[in-house]
Amino acid sequence: AALRRTDVILEVGPGTGNLTVKMLEKVKKVIACEIDPRLVGELQKRVQGTCLANKLEIKVGDILKTDLPFFDACVANLPYQISSPFVFKLLLHRPFFRCAILMFQREFALRLVAKPGSKLYCRLSINTQLLARVDHLMKVGKNNFRPPPKVESSVVRIEPKNPPPPINFQEWDGLVRIAFVRKNKTLSAAFKSSAVEQLLDHNYRIHCSLHNTVSSILICYILCTVTYILTSMGVKKLTLKSLMHQRFSKKEIPENFKISEKIQTVLKDTGYSEKRARSMDIDDFIRLLHGFNSEGIHFS
Image (cartoon, rainbow, N blue to C red; front, top):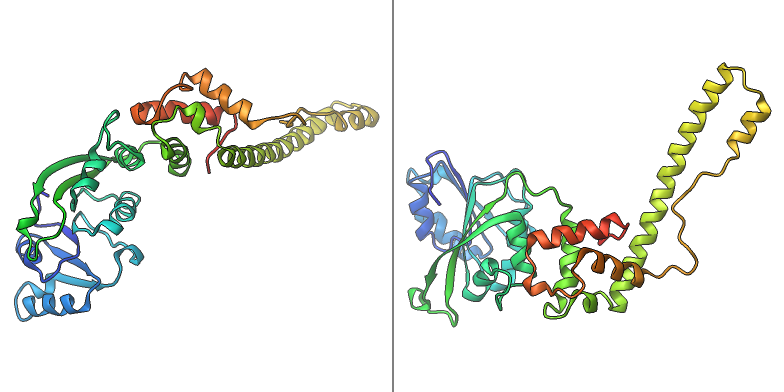
């Protein structure tokens, strides 16, 4: 993690403090988050009465339910069941941290760094790589632990992209969630799901409704301005009344509108109709999201 003497370190799962003590000797402060009260007691005893005690802050509880403090770097050894939610809790945390050194089960770690075309490439891969640079640092055999676990582990380094990409993450995640449900299917087939069509139809109608509301406000403002100008020029009231009753175009939805046709048109026009999520990279999904949004189709 290239620790610095000025660093504040967030450590998740310190256990009895073997790594904690070594970090306390090198950094300004360690904030240790531990869910097991028994291990908290062991950690407190380990630094009690030493010069390191004042540099250690302990938070007891579930890290997923804990508000993250300011920190420069994060070090964690995570159980499988909280690995994914914790990664995204980290990546969406502000202010930005410098890096995180995290130990995961081997398969999860390999999914984080998987590239398009890889068997392990998935929604987790592309979402993480959208927001951060991810590197696999080393394998850790199960015999390095006592008692040894049933699975192998790996250490991964994550560096948030700062500034982050100018993308609405909820929109992005909504798109890739649909695409990766069946990553070996063509996008044309993936978007023909009735549940997907219902969701996007609902979102499309909301978008059109909001567009019309904004248009109405803008039209009212324009009419008031035009009315004021024409009045100052001596335009007759009858003419003004006629002006106020003119129809302005709105984004109306035809009665025979079908979201399925609009979806397939976007896929065809962007060139992704026959593509499969497993082989698409970040730039591909950015272009596809732009294509959908340009046609008023949204995912959140």
